[in-house]
Amino acid sequence: MIRSLLEKDIASIAKLERELFGPGAWSEALVRQEINAPARNYLVDEGPEGGIRGYAGYWYDGDDAELMTIGVAKRWQRRGIAIHLLEYLLSQAHQQGARRMLLEVRVDNEAAISMYARLGFLRIGLRKRYYQPEGVDAYTMSLDIAQWAAMSYAGRLPQSDGARRHPSPAQADAVGTDTDATRQGDTPTGRNMTAMNDAVRKD
Image 1: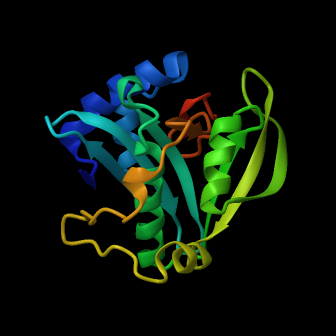
Image 2: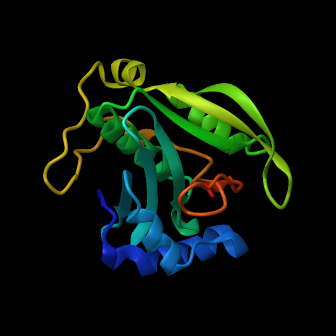
């Protein structure tokens, strides 16, 4: 079940951070700082037994939305959870009126690049030595959200209720992905560091 990330989830998210990002993981304090920062939208995927299987979030400033992080627990990877979460984020951003979604991704993270391309993200730039301390370059990618909505759901996006829970996108559960953790950055309010395979994040 996809739902909003709540205060009670912070310890679980910090644990997943350590599993996925190692030395670059956000602490509980940094997770709390990030999700409570202005204009943030964070979701979790909660399993049938109540555990958090994945999480993702974006920042929306009234024009473009920027993907901040996606992470899926290793035991739940390659089951379509990451792309499912991303589709929900895109749906929310569309409902908020976002024009585009932007992200950065390591140039060597082929799985993440492939997932984003399947959704319609296009490369629009290159940031040299973006990810530190490794000095790895990053592609900047962009998605026209209105175009994505029209092509994916013929304009019929899932509607959220007061709890910001969405009905499941029709095809999401059938779609697999090779990346379930990716992130942007070095501090929670402006991160851009994409990990390999199943963790993508903006540090």
